[in-house]
Length: 208
Image (cartoon, rainbow, N blue to C red; front, side, top):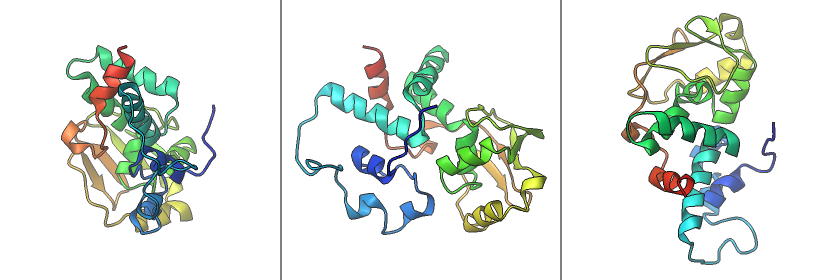
């Protein structure tokens, strides 16, 4: 599968928003957005009026990069959201938030989504007691995500748990740090998803 290998901080600068792709670095004054809050490249600081299409495309790209997906994957979630009852744009974000790698990150079991994806792929987690190594696995309300007992001795896992010990809890996730597990109370509402994106523009883009 194709994978982005360039400096990820360029992605945040291109989208003009923090996408939290570098873990704890994003919370410091070393963050690229804080230091250079303009697009990368020779003409990054130039002012250019964006067309309607360009505005819609940027919103889609922002959401896609935020969750670390390729175009085909992202469009698949859009099609799933279209078949669900409710508002399509909000359904799309709920599906993206319910990915196992995202839940692992939200629970504080990884410093970033890329790291969460790697840890899931290396089979460090279980869902309802069963080993799952698929980052795109969609969790449901009531599912229990836990770090495998055999992985608790890993220095990497210990370091992440220690670093995130004081991370604020989310309303839709119940995290028991002593047991290194998280329970999905419910899928998040739009107001509980902190991604600053106009999802209706993504719907308009794909609906053309």
